[in-house]
Length: 371
Ligand code: XIL
Image (cartoon, rainbow, N blue to C red; front, side, top):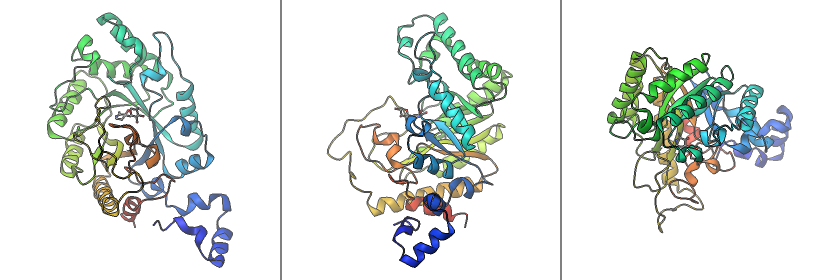
């Protein structure tokens, strides 16, 4: 049970005193310590935002987001399928709203993502020529990165170009544009968005083989005289199996290349899975065991989750001079994509806040590291 939850169940005198000191409307937000304030001197604290949150449909949710996070990544709305739905059609409405949200609430935005093999617009499937793919690639980067230059802090220019063994993934971009497409994407982004930081982002790129491939990519971009400012490690890990050693080694090796390092999509899965990683195209078939905690997370798992987050943040703090940002992939457990991937309709518990934005034991452990 959270230490902050029960201000309303204090005895009458204590409740009166508490509400007399704090303006009533903000009791909720002020009584929960703030992640962004706690780690203000260490690194940025980000979250992924969905449509409802960007639209500010629930004022309490907005207040909560603003109290906890100083950076944000759109969970979907800047992906090409959504922002560039037709060959000559762009839909900037939600992305513009996100930029306005950031400005209004002092939250820095990381654009996600320009070039990715998933969530592509349907018209891409009809394209069968290198020329047309190149035109899409060039126009997309120019138009989208250009529009938001100076308005977003950074872009995930390329997302997930690597296989697990460190070779290049056989995406539509590799197929038609060849090995250099990653460097080309950064070159175009640098021209269109000179004021924006440019990142390469992937999952499992803390694992040695994939990390080696990622290092090659970064070196190649730099050798071409093209700018790359950072590398994002998504950080979709599994409870009890967070690869701390590989993460630490990766922080050091990436930093040695002269790029910033950040954790861009952090969550720790507590549900059963028969593979590692975060390939959105990969799915699992449901069975009787696949949704073990529909009502609540058992205490033993809750404690393991807390210990994992504690160890992870201890490591981030050890390297706070090298890690620029830690972004959670969702505000609370109800928002997490892990409720629907790789199996739809499960009940997952991968974040620091529960379904009512209340702090979980993992949150307490993370905050306690700074006490
Ligand atoms: C996920 C979103 O959270 C889901 O809403 C969507 O259905 C699929 O994509 N790696 C990434 C993110 O880079 O863009 C993915 O986001 C999660 C894995």
